[in-house]
Image 1 (cartoon, helix red, strand yellow):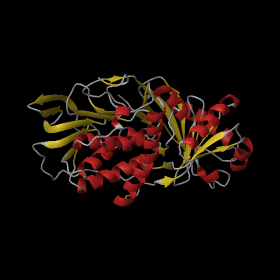
Image 2 (tube, one colour):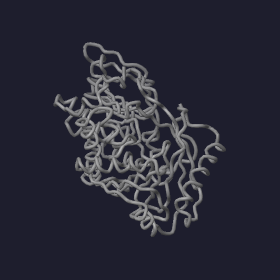
Image 3 (cartoon, rainbow, N blue to C red):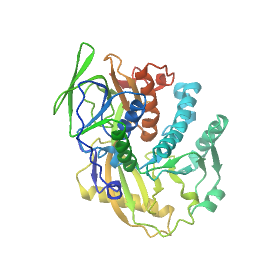
Image 4 (cartoon, rainbow, N blue to C red):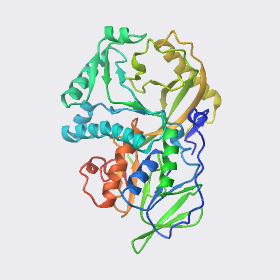
Length: 404
């Protein structure tokens, strides 16, 4: 399955990482993690720091899957607004889930700081603007519920928007505590730290089957077999080798990265930008003053092979961006398509398989995938060390949408 195609931006700014191969493979690992992207790396960190022996397997170069196409927006707001999530699952769990997302961004920052890794992590606010007048009440309702539950936010009316940006909209929600990151650099640097902590990394190893033998997992791969007490699948949007997803939509989206811009004087704090309509346009800047712009989601699972199609979609995104920032002399320097996943109930899949003991999953489906990776790594750590985690019930696999 092609999970991305076209000209990716992050690999051009991030030094490649080659795992060491000088270690001796263990006869039995506490945990084998399948997938060396954001979820796999963060989960490995949580587990090795809890004293477990960990191996990570990936069928590609490590970090070269969805992580390379991740646009690096870290936001506590989700594709489903809090007031809508409350209607879906009740106030207590919905508010708790939003709080977990908010806390996860702080947790990401703490990892960056205590491990001293350069990841271009920058705290920034976000705005979600009303795409038309009909969505203003939705924005105001979300502002009221976030503020009521202590999540930092503000509301911008049309005059305030016009003062802070070169465009005006009917209204916008302003959220604080968000951040942007170079996701590939984060994963690559984190994998290096994991090696130093004793995690064994195995690129180009494809998991084919898992058999339980006297409570030990016999993991059959394209190379030699592995043996573990537990296995965690952090395989992103690809088909999981064991079990199957229920209530997951696999789609594709498009991204272009612009030429460097001289200055952003008319872009308030270079906030991250998205909107209420679906599919939504989203925009962020980079440390080298480019714009990353994404959108135009399509109900097709595989990234297209056609360069002409990717370029056409990028030009469409460029036109939408030029309407917002008419004074910028924008060009398309990179353009690509990427697969992404969403769950029907707007929650990630995190937890132990309902019938396969010691089989765990962290599939961060949704527009907040990196944030889900962070909070999911902590939930899985607690489950594996036998510590009760009440938050695990919110994202468990036993719900209607899960892994069977």
